[in-house]
Length: 160
Image (cartoon, one colour):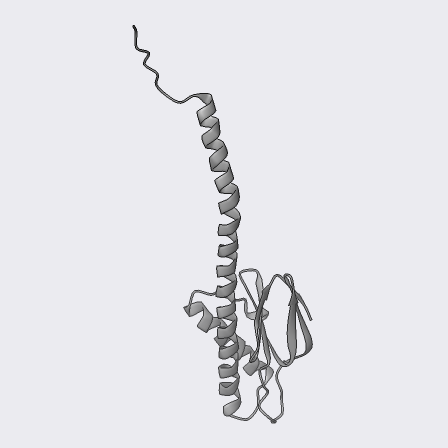
């Protein structure tokens, strides 16, 4: 009797392996993408908190000397925030940093809404230290809004 020497896989075996791999990929890929997205959002939230803390610190520094913050000093505050973030490898366009002395924020999906927001543009006369209530910035295409003693919102669109 002659022994048959069969080598390789049959077509059915290969199809079964491909189908099993496709099912595993269909289950695994969405889960991995979800975790990557959550990690990115957590990173942006941490950066938003950093921007809020830096804004408060820089505003106090600007105010201490002469009890006022002019538009030029405000521009310096924003530049200092950008410089500090750059040390951590975060790039924020200077004009994207906005400081609000009043307001709240909410989020629906990827849209962030700032309500009752009083954008701070600087003051020419002396007065009370302006409180930093909301800070908005844009990092890598994501809009980040940090609210004092509240939440940090991460989205793609902003309504003011």
